[in-house]
Length: 113
Image 1 (cartoon, rainbow, N blue to C red):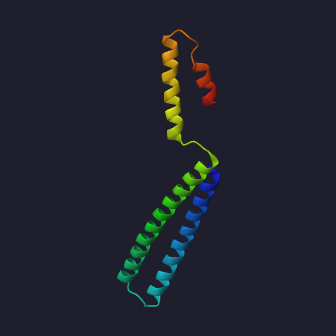
Image 2: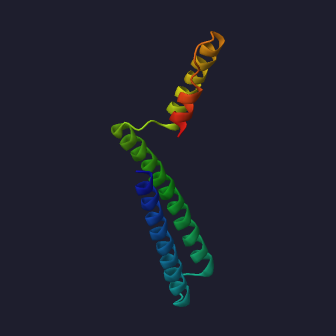
Image 3: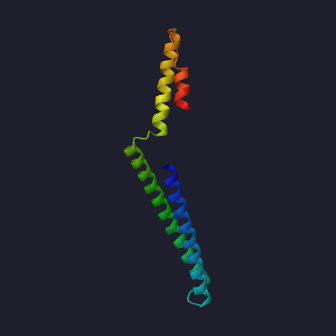
């Protein structure tokens, strides 16, 4: 699951890089043909860069939401949830240790493997 999200992100990043290069090439061609000035070309590239950043953030947020949705559907626990369980188990272990009964250290070691 994590690998799929990673590959999708890298694919999008590669597409964005190619698109940026294509935009830069097109703007340079427009400057060469005197269709736009150097200042206008700089403004165009800045506007496109801002739009690309906004889109990248939107896609990243969407990907995170989808990953969380898919994880919850699959019954995968989040790191936060796992940390809460570990804290609770350590608390229980301390209580059992104080009472002289068998501790949960071996169980915790097995869970962390």
